[in-house]
Image 1 (cartoon, rainbow, N blue to C red):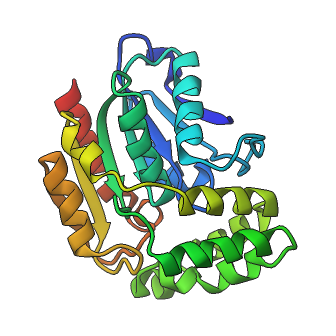
Image 2 (cartoon, rainbow, N blue to C red):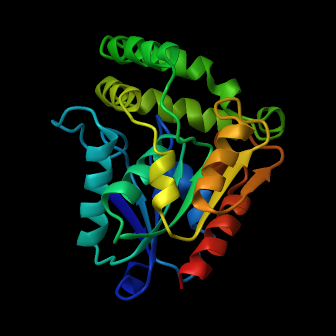
Amino acid sequence: MAIFTRDAHRMAGTPAVVLLAAFPYDHRMWEGVARRFEGVPVIAIDPPGFGRSPVPLDPPSLEIYADYVAQAVRAEGAEKVLVCGNSMGGYTAQAMIERHPRLVGGVVLVGTKADIDTAAARAARTEMAVGALVGRAQEQLVKSIPTMLAKETLTDFPKIPQLMEKWINEAPGEAISWAQRALAARPGRLETLGRAQIPAMVVRGEQDQNSTPAQAEAMAKALGTRVVSVPRAGHLVPLEAPSAVARAVMSVYRRMS
């Protein structure tokens, strides 16, 4: 598991912020957020198969991903972490809450949900998982970029979709396939969130086409917190509005400390 740290020398005795990327991206999507955490230890993760992380030999599973993250951050000396995950990273953050409750002391869920996929969504993921192994997934993912972003992002910040296209084309087909199978197999975790007695916040872009306001509110209710709705942002709020995500994280972080 490839990790990238900032202020790692502060890790001992201080909670760290762990950043988990959306599919099909890596730690680079968090750079605009991470640079806003002055003096706070930060660990950004490359998901399995993406960036510098190898594709696991394990069967596709977000639970396995969560265990790898927990192992990696403990190896860095972190004893307590705030986990912030976007989309697939949010699903993995929920798995960490369930499987590593002593490690996770706070959570920020961004552009994600706690529901299982519909049958149609699972079928689409399976189709992409198969297509990825013969080089067909990248073109499909590039075509979906406009649905991931707010209309203002597309018109006012063209470098963001350009970066996304670059990162998609760098993603190995094996990693895309592994991730899609893991996502399709994930369980619902509203009950897990309801049992988590930790500081938390839910963040959602107002123009997110991949999660609904009702899904965000359900997570917030389970966690005993609120939803921060970010204007002029879609599904990938860390890219579109990094300052809003950083504020949410620091609000939760201060409650941990």
